Length: 446
Image 1 (cartoon, rainbow, N blue to C red):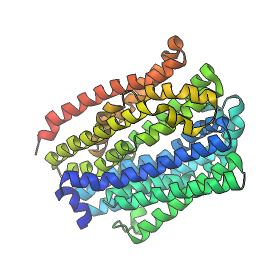
Image 2 (cartoon, rainbow, N blue to C red; image 1 turned 30 degrees about the vertical axis):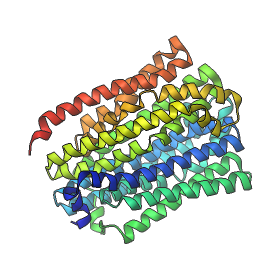
Image 3 (spheres, helix red, strand yellow; image 1 turned 45 degrees about the vertical axis):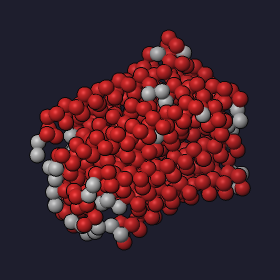
Image 4 (tube, one colour; image 1 turned 180 degrees about the horizontal axis):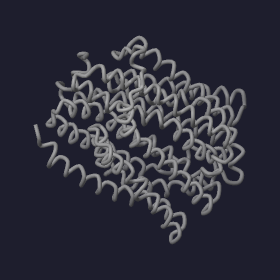
């Protein structure tokens, strides 16, 4: 095992968390800035209807590519614990299985998406005038999804090797290239929504090339043909943990379907555009919290595999403390500058008027989400798939979807926005109880 990965067992937790989380946060920042700028370009250069189209298409493509994210996170949990136990051969076999499973499953979904594109788009909320630009945006991106899926898998494996700077560079390459190509295809060549899709597709491919280069020349995981022999038991272990992330992304996609249809029924295309802006802000504003969560997982997973439970406890407490601090800062900024933030995205007067209030409600409980995110991530890092699944699904699946279905019947569109903080509070309480029980009983053992 390399000196780099053994640092996870020996270095100061704060230093490790900083080393893991800062590159992850910067990578997520570039990725979300990319999405934000993409939305701004589309909203200002094409129109609010194009933002609504993006709100329909992006959950579909993220659902397909999330197989890569799921296999990346689930497999990297297996990989980190294998490295922690000194089982290098299992780590290599795990990585090979991640590659085979990612390309196989993502390609299958692409075929389904291609042959049933209109049905899929309609199911995700491409109602009325939204369908035409949504279809124009969907098809070019669809064929680039396997590359995006591999990028998501590779990113998590890179972090499991404790080489998070390379993971950061991969995300920066994708983000910067997309912004440049957006300007070329949308503004210069005037290709509209199709140009935005081309820009995104090429950015996925460039990210894929960088990650491929990393694994050929820089990675400590040097694969051979023998590692690509399929092992049913190992595949089942990877899938059991991957299912946690994939189920979360699946539930997020179901939520997107319900939200898009509910918002269209309550406020038409403009309401869908409002949520399009809010969803981008959710991705962007919480980047440091998500970065800490990603930085937390390899440290917790490695030390859990090494049965060093005192370091696992310390990692949990430290991660929650810093993630909560950033979440509070995000809450204050959004609360204070909601209207100026919205005005950046569009010149549409109706959208500018309706979005700030909704944005404040959606972010209302953000100061407490660190417990929910870190708690669910711990159970995944520790290989406890059932608890990780339940906690990961708690916000969107068990609370938010039912609330979005019920509250608008009594409060109209306001019922949609207030569902978000209620779901945050309830899921945080549940996660806190699970985490407290785990730390009281299991993590006391040495």
